[in-house]
Image 1: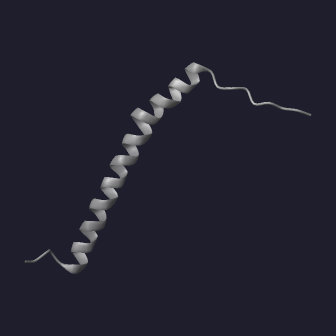
Image 2 (image 1 turned 90 degrees about the vertical axis):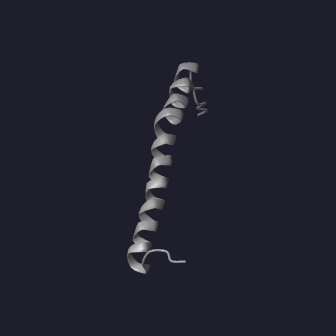
Image 3 (image 1 turned 180 degrees about the vertical axis):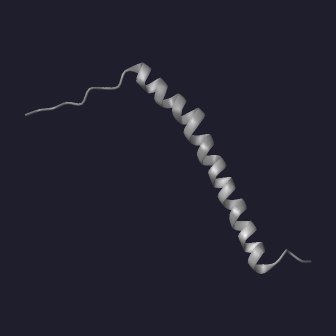
Length: 52
């Protein structure tokens, strides 16, 4: 039995692009920056503030 996938419609592809461009990527970007800031904060909590 040969089952061929139905290609996505143009509207579906545009909606996927908009979701990625305006929802998923900004949320992931904020999450990465927040995780980095949290890790720096935790490191400074344990090791003390930076000194010269």
